[in-house]
Length: 160
Length: 454
Image 1 (spheres, rainbow over the protein chains, first blue to last red):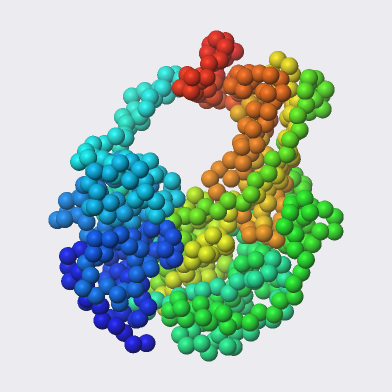
Image 2: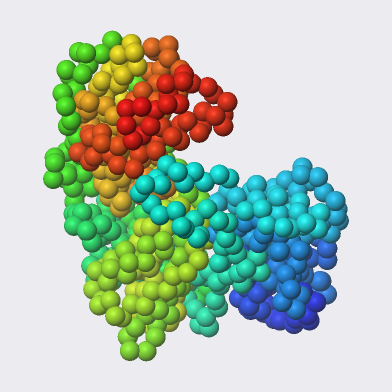
């Protein structure tokens, strides 16, 4: 099968790969580039575990064709900690016990980041709406909502 | 949060350093940075993908299997049928002598539920494996199926699983697990009111965020490394050893963080066939459930039917309880005979009842095999018991919380399955709950204690 060149920025770093036409961005990131922070929970756009930010917009990487990402800027939770320092959202998730099995966490953090990037002062309802496409089957939504609110308020002291 | 250490002060040293203190979870830094490694977070060069051909029928005899077209499909490396599996008939709990072996790894003579694995197709891409699987031809003779436990237990019902011979699990105690305590009929005679109710539940899917799967790498010296998200590493190791007739030292199972299990990853389903495929091809093999398979194929919580007959006095004493419980195992045992047995021990609930009669049945039907899920055998029982307690309280016009205080078990009480109650704190929990919920009860219940008459 003919391969298609794709060149894009992943967390600010240039990447250039050849992919089979039809390959999802999720597969490209995980299997070829080795960023396994986006997870494949359903591969059909229903669980949100594969969420990434493309050019500032929250996207489900399992439904994005890799070949459409030319020149795009892609952000993942795997690249969020700068020089080993946790992003405020990561800090807040840690402090608020906002993960159990952890499988939904990278996608959840991307959904939260996309929200805070466009609305730094969200209401609780805004947060609930923003993570409504991300399923946590350990059902720990409440600490997740609290973590996002705390990160927005620049306040992530431990509450456990 | 308040930790009430005084309840057990005489039993337990209070100089505890960690209990009652908030501590960060050790795995959270990995979770929030996306660095936690799940079994599928590794790419292995040359990896093959395994996909199953599954039964479209609830119950059918297999007349023949034709894989010739599938074998010619581009990318196909190997096709496995029952003949390739060294010890094809197994059951998970044979490890603790709960037999008989009653389930085929790949169906050979019959399929007993819609979705049962029949043929495994191994190809160099998921797409090729799926396309080739669609080309496998299986000739079925459809048989009558039974989906309801009451129907399954009637004389003349289709036999679901010949390894059992009848549609219930035969315990050493007979057709069900039995608990007999006191004289239940004498208890009913003593009662002012008798209430008999039937409770039913449907199967529940765990739906973990991460689907069931494993990745197998053949190593040198005939060893196989299997990265798996099993919740039951030693069930997997030992059952794989039996199914593949392979000594344990050839099997290197690597677990790790499970992306949600809730009991749904306790069965041994993907690893034996994936390791066999890796052995027969000499290449790494990935077998990961699709979301569809996770929802339709993996074991759910069993459906249950629970009939409770209680005798109660006007002053609120439960004097007799008779329970008949039915657990729908689906087509195979997996963990259900154990779940039904747990129910038998649990049914009186946290209450002291002097006269108890319990029968719990593990029933086979042509439904998806059920298995472990969060307190299986007990959770649905508690739902039924507590709804029943509310109904009983209403029947005698008593406050439902006070009714529970009257019947709560206390230290020293003999339970129906002949265990003496110790370490009880139900009364103290209800006292706290009463205050927290602003649901007052009479003073005498606040004076009660699990340690004595109070």
